[in-house]
Image 1 (tube, protein in one colour):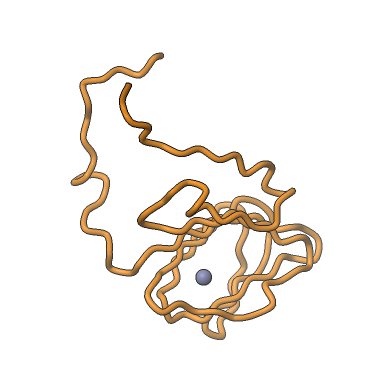
Image 2: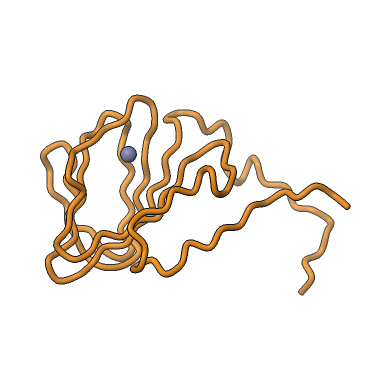
Length: 128
Ligand code: ZN
């Protein structure tokens, strides 16, 4: 039997959770991922930045505001925002709708290659 080379975790329905941090749950070594839901009208109660890590926010559903360095952006399903480590950021859900999003955090400038250079096509066939 070969070694297990994956982890799986069921987050549940996005609108039923508040925040799930996946690094430990998935044994991730290169990134932190959180799955988040802000109920209607609620906001992250602080502005934050990072020392080394950039973040990508992927908005899955709902509508809200993304505050970044004094600029206020409207976000909703399909919005993707990348923030440099030093960017001061905050998020608020609209009064009428919750806001679900995924945040992926990794050390800025750490990616040595991307899919095209790093991916390898294997001879193995999937079961279907
Ligand atoms: Zn952060």
